[in-house]
Image (tube, rainbow, N blue to C red; front, side, top):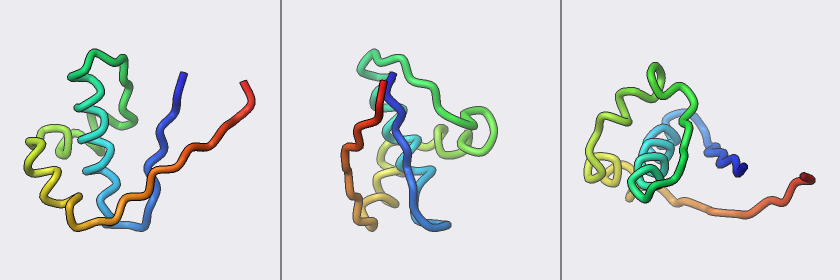
Length: 70
């Protein structure tokens, strides 16, 4: 199992990143569970990729790897 954590300050685009990442991985056949998929993130998940990208293109995104014990 891999856990992807999206963090940032309020109104930084976290939900947009969650929606776009989750939708993309699902479209590639990955088994993805999105926290608050039917509540908090439902609106973002209903947006098109272009709508989500419009917001994220304005944000610097840093991707890092963190190893945990098994």
